[in-house]
Every structure is written in structure tokens, then in C-alpha cells.
Length: 150
Image 1 (cartoon, rainbow, N blue to C red):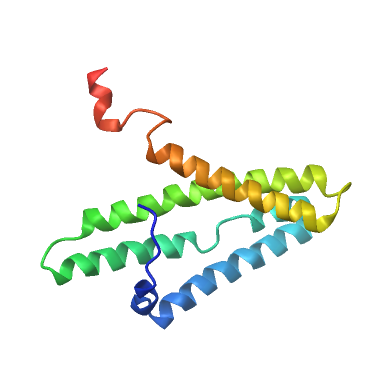
Image 2: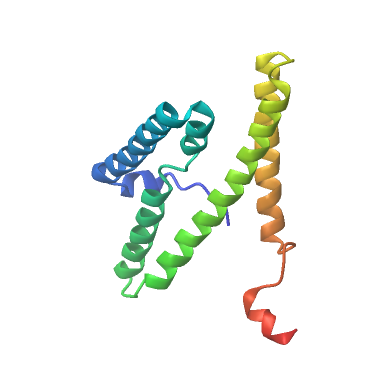
């Protein structure tokens, strides 16, 4: 389920925020170096790298393990499942960002910037949310454990 838990902000320690900031900064510096060497088009592709995802996935896993450990259980599987769910959301968000990029790329040279960005943002949201809903309803395929029955 997609949910917002503001209590998770209290669970995150300052060094974890610093780790996310560091990943984001390093990805931006890398994109700048690539852009300097190979041009802004290639550099922009590197800037699109989800910079904080590696840090976020590892933090989500460790937080889930800690939550399960508090009640006396091994949270390894739960931590992995939570991180994989976050990865699925990130992948679907990236698909939405592709839609955003296509709208901006095709429309920006000829239309009002504000309207193009508003439309592109709407496309991003609708595409990401729509893909998440399709995934949730399992429209894209069979569950792995059901493959043996085919």
C-alpha cells in the first residue's frame, strides 16, 4: 500500500539525511563532469540518475529490520520486501519522468513555458499513478508463484 508516515521522519537520524545528501551531491557532480566532457545532452542523462535511491533503499531496509527486531522477530525478509516495493515505486516514477521529458522536449520550443511544465507535471503524475494502479491490480502479468500452474 502507498502511504505517508510522518513518524518515519522522527526515525531517520541526521547521519542518514547526510548520506542521502551526499549521494545526491555526488550524482550531480558526476553529471557535471560528464556534461563538461561529453556535452549537456549526455550530462542530462546522468543527472536523471535517481541519486538518493541507493541510500533510501538501504535505509528503508534497516528501519524495517529494526521495527521487527523490537517485537522479537527477524526482519530481514520484511526489510527486503519494503526496499523492493520502494524500488518498484521508483521505477514507475522514472517511467512518469520519461513522459514528463517527452512533453517538455516536444512542446517547450513552441509553447508557453508555464503551461508546458504544468502539462508535463500532470503527465508525470497521471502516468506514475496509473502505472502504480495497474501494478497493484496485477494487470502487467501473473504473479511469480502462479507461473508453475501454466
